Length: 257
Image (cartoon, rainbow, N blue to C red):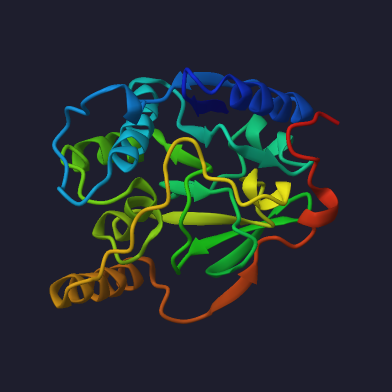
């Protein structure tokens, strides 16, 4: 499976760290130069409320989607440069034979909490996969199909929300139109959750709180309803702890085993 890593040109320390992470699981990756919010104007149609870091992060992921859309692989993986892997992540990133054939996106990361999943199925080596029903934000690591990348490029010619909301919030119609799965236990996490420091990711800063209008709330509920109807996930869902085994199975951040 092709693995793309988004990395700012000025973040050489992050590149060293992520290189060590991939070496530790025996997987190669291709570096993709991130769009840098600090280097000038971001000439792309966007909603006014988006911050420059949010726009730059979204455009960085779009660069990856374009590479995947233009490529020949059915599935590829995208990572941000602060990713940390479980020890057993390598085999899952070496091929895509475990990915459900109807999957548009497979989320690989955890925020060390619980999420709601449906229709869990074993994918081997103690891991399972299920439809992602609830909100689970973050874009540190996910698998995306060539077809989904092509569709997302068409649907994001105008940026209306941060990329993690667009991909992983059921309140977003863009997310609701995808068939999204989650691996459990998760295969990766952001460095900040394992380092003991609440550091700010380089690619995107914490977004300001934005009060939701009544219309926005209504659209969000309609998107959730659409997603449930599309995926048949009204019943038989369960809350799953994606971090089980992580504290003992994760490698120390930035160090190879």
